[in-house]
Length: 158
Image (cartoon, rainbow, N blue to C red):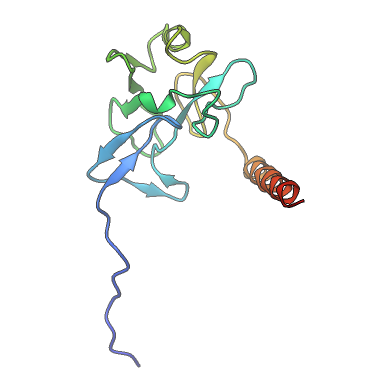
């Protein structure tokens, strides 16, 4: 029997939540962690109205300014309750909220984000009822990304 005590693996220096996928987020003092991760993290997304896909900073040619926006929840996020709206600080210093009627038009103006529609993403509630991605869809998406990277690496090696 060992007399060893608990082993410290590390410490949390800061905790951040990103309410809108690929936008800057908010620093937290505490947060609830669920089986899906931090409660409210990436609960919303901008959706490209031309193809229905979420805007992502992983595609900087198409979405070069996403990191210029900052999103914060207006009210605390609670489990099993409709998501509260978010406040989005725009690069020019103005702010909009996810529950205002002209949000899609505001975000789609020149020098903001083009072709954008704001939707709840992967969570109940939100301004627009977007469906959850199933585990099968997430797995298929991950497999597709891995196969694409593998094909690219194979082609580069030839």
